[in-house]
Image: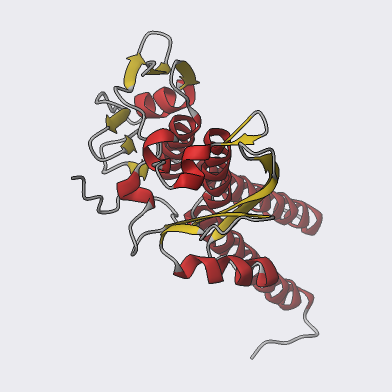
Length: 129
Length: 170
């Protein structure tokens, strides 16, 4: 190969390596931002705050589609949302791990948590006193 | 020994430097991303706001203060749908202070939860430090049953980042 061809090949390898490096870096950042740990924390806090804001006779409907998608990706088939009213605790899991828990401070009586797996929704009902 | 006058050797040294630059940039971005996403999502301010809103809602009804509260026969936890075990623990992560002031009113402020957080609220306001509790303060003018104007002040604080805490239910 002549000198000009060698320089061109070096240039191509240089740019390909750079592009691969930055693509890998962006993939890492994207994976971290949509990772299980972050999503579990976001949903646990969102559900707990929704419960805290509820009044008797109201109903909250929370879409869990992103959470179900991540659970499916991780082949997790258990309960993605596990409410424990005796401890005022909401635990969210999207993988075979401990999940993330957050307490709510509302003491509404007979709160009902219904997981609608078909529509990927969580329906919370606070009956009247 | 590397001959710097030799063009090929110079190019090799440059590419080594380039890989070093890539490594530094890569390590920096990975470290920054991990640090950012390992931090807790802070909802303490929102929690403090919700608590003060709920208390305000059940104490002040259409501009009138609940007279039972002034008489001392009003359980804010029961009537405002708040969990006493979580919010009123002295070693806990929450603080509530309710004051009423006005002409002819001698009302001792009611305080619940971790009293140390009250100081945290004022420090946090001045320093904006993430280690101190986030707080919410609300003041409204209300009327008592004699139509006297009173100032109802509610200060609430939360220092709960998340995770399971010990809650002892009766």
